[in-house]
Image (tube, rainbow, N blue to C red; front, side, top):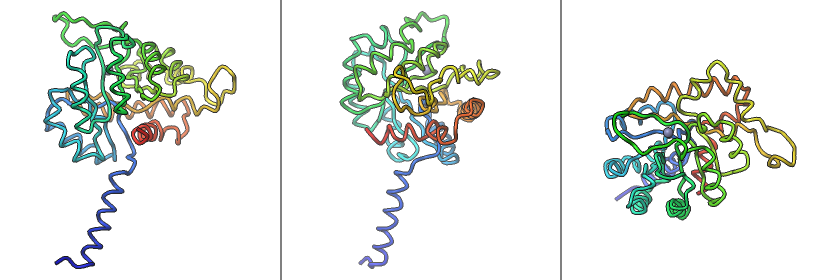
Amino acid sequence: MISWKRAAFAFSLGLILASSAAAQPKIIDAHMHYNGDPAFLKTLLAKLDQVDGMAFLLVEPKDLDGVKDAIKEHSNRLVGFGEIQLDHPKVLDQIDRFHAAGFRGLGELSGPRNRYDDPSYSRVYERAERYGMLLLFHTGIVNRMTPDIPADISVDRMRATTLDNIARRYPKVNIIGAHLGNPDYQWAAEIARWNPNIHWDLSGSTLIKKQEDYTFFKSIFWWSAVVSPHTPKGGPNAFEKIVFGSDVFGGELEEFDRGLERYHKMLDACGVPPEVQADIFSGTLWRLLNKQ
Ligand SMILES: [Zn+2]
């Protein structure tokens, strides 16, 4: 028989565990590719414990079964994203499977045969809307890892501006654009200014390219405290449109720390206040996760 003391202890322990599962982490990384290797997952979890972090783990359909239990078990550290291909004939079934496994988003979407805002992809965005899933899109220049193999890929179909129409058609869907549209920074920021459901990560080569000129981003995110009929009323600091993303891929977790360092340097150079930086590194994505 269980004593009342033991029962009370178990109950309060349960409360502590329940509340810690819902605690906001210090860092949320919107852009962490899973390479299919359980050893990487172990290293990643240790890293996230160390920094009190959480990562949106981008998982290809082939890796879903191998990783879904770990994501559930570590729900305070990992949030599943289904890395589907927009043109895959079974894409809707794949989305259903990811959703059934508790995944909260889709992406990184990349390499479409048509522009992201092509009507043929509406069924994907409608399904994401129905499930309350976030969407992470690759935008701008993209790598070419196997130059000898022909590939029907075009950066023109992944321009930052292609997200504008999707954001307006699906106001309940929250969109994260990766890489700030590199090099279409102006357009990326401008469409985020008017679309409350678009945010950007600054992963990739942009913060390396601009490392001698970080105040440049003040000219891109320019509308803080501006009062004008030509910009949304009562808007927060313009830098609030940025969220943290590392774009770790191929298991190279060192990029997580390098990404953090570059973000901090740029935001400090632009004089972004600490409370806004706290949103960039965690608060904004935390709110998006908890409002869906
Ligand atoms: Zn990308």
